[in-house]
Amino acid sequence: MPHFFISSKDVNNNKITVSDRDNFNHIAKSLRTKKGEKLLFIDENQIQYETVVEEITNKEITVNVENSYKSFRRLDFRLYLAQSPLRSDAQSSIIEKAAELGADGVYPVYTDNCALAAAVIEKKIPKWQRIMLEASKQCERAYVPSCYGLTNLENIIKLKNDGFRIIAFCERHAKLSLHEYCKENPIIKGENVIVIIGPEGGFSQREFKLFEDNEIAMLTLGELILKADTAVTVALGNVIYEFENYRKN
Image (cartoon, rainbow, N blue to C red; front, side):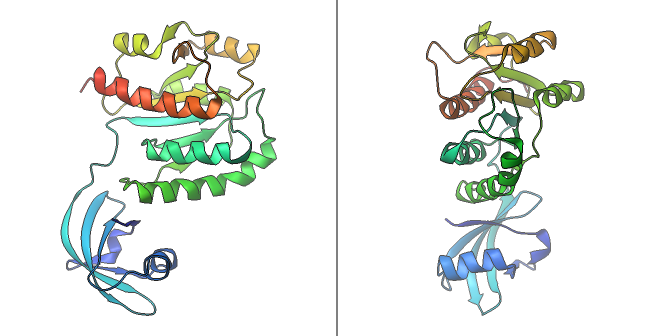
């Protein structure tokens, strides 16, 4: 069922009025929605609304709310991806999959072997945010994740001081598998976890030393060497699985 993000201000007496241009055009023109069809909406408070279209004019859409409830389309911990952007469509796919897998946000990280120039990355961030919005609609997410501004590994590591757990996937320098690590260090409900994935060329020796000096867990996903875009999907998916397997409430 089509799913759209709205403001709670649009909800009044069990009716929702849709007048913003993007949602209106998508519903009325792209989907050619008709009176009597069902739509899903969600507001900034993560309240989900099951609705039926009552009226469509040239400027707005009115729907009747049949049911409302707190959305459950979210993880029980906050998952972030810190990743060195790739060339071509691979990066767009990474951004989309991160949103689909429930990530709260993506930090584009400029690494020593980054495939793109910093100026190119900064220009692409608005596009990546739009991709996250569309993926969130399609997957009925409770909220839209953020694509943050370009940063570096030093700044990501500083987030340890704010209580973030940081893990890096470094196949050739890993000391533990993700499974072994989570068995001994289970992720706690509500915790902030940042997953770091490097570029196709891998991390530099300077960056490996940076991880070691700051006691960042360097983990492996197994014996296979994965391309960076594949590694992102596998890493995020496995972190979610390990949380469910060893979850601490």
